Amino acid sequence: MINGEDTASGTALLLAAAPAGKGCLIDATSVLPTLAAVPPSILTGTTAATIVELADPADPQTVLTRIRAAATTPGPLSLYITGQLNLDHKQRLIHLALARTTPTTLRYTGLPWHWLASELKLRHPGTTTVVTDLVAAPDAWQQLCTEGLVLGYGIRVYGRITPPPPRRRIVEPAYLKALATTWRSGINPPLARLHEQAAAQAGPDDALFLAVDNTAVPAPAAWAVQVPSRPHQEPAPAPISENTEVAEEDPLPAIFAAAHAGRHGEAASLAAMWEGWALRTFGAGSVQAIHWLEVRADLARTADDPARSCELWMAAADARLARQEPPDDPVVEGAVDRAHHQWQELRDPQRARELGPPLVSLRRHVPGRRSGAVEAVQRRLELLHTMPPVGARRAAS
Image (cartoon, rainbow, N blue to C red; front, side, top):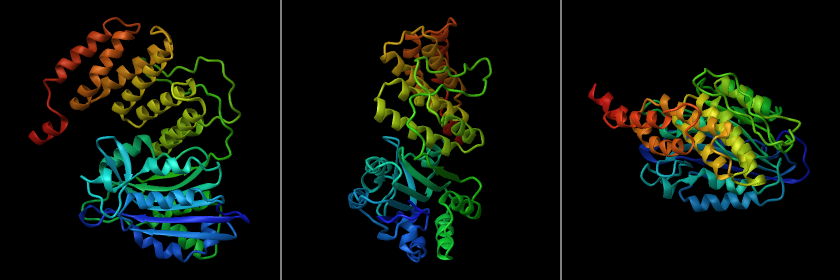
């Protein structure tokens, strides 16, 4: 509970991590002296506070142990994390790089982001605040722009993620420094307002700024998907067909507003957070979880990531078929049609070749209303096998 009066004892974990050597993209530990000068009660929002500091840790298990210990404390918990995000190419998972992390050792020397999420999801909603100042390596940046940075329902998340800097440049944690400087001056506004001030001061304009606070939103049953109309060739997402009660507060307008304003990472983070809530509450394969899978698929389309959108729409169709929904159900057909359309939008032959076979298999089971859909995918696949990858064509030119 930051910016409030809480008589319980709180905990603040300050984590600053980055690789040593050429792979470093951020001077993470430079913010620690500034944060350490802030009164502990401000960092935790409580009258009594415990501060735990981790500067350039090297072992992911050690970091996990400290996070787990902090997460089990009964009072409010605030995490301040500055560092570098890298992507594990094998499992497509985001990691926080640590001191010994290199591109080839990331899976063993970095901290998987989902480890952090797993520890925090066990805490009571509304008791956890995460403030980040992160830089993303190029591959991680591409994924974060469409999928966001996920922690879980009931957790406040504020911060920024900057794109990879130019070569031989090191990013400064200017966002966290701006927060700490304000606090040191004796001013302690609500965190949402302070976030806006720090974001405007720190920049840059192309950073992903996260402002997620759904701790007070009631748990939803389900919502109909409402998105702007599409061109004729791309069907609009169908609403959930089951008769379920609609929650008083619908998060979809805010999510789609963020997406259409270009804040794709924020929108994706919110959607993934609600999908995680649906999975925990109703289970995998539930209509509520499938609903949020479809929302994420549409957000990927809005973010101009047809490959990810195609993958998600195929996953949604498979999930509906697994629920014994008939192949000629309009909702099932719509999911496959949208996957097909997004696959046609792909301009990278390699990615299109990878996604083509599962789409053919799905199309054979769900042919849709237009004849020749399976044959159309097969013809394009044959053509794609004669084309080099995008990178090879650029190198040749």
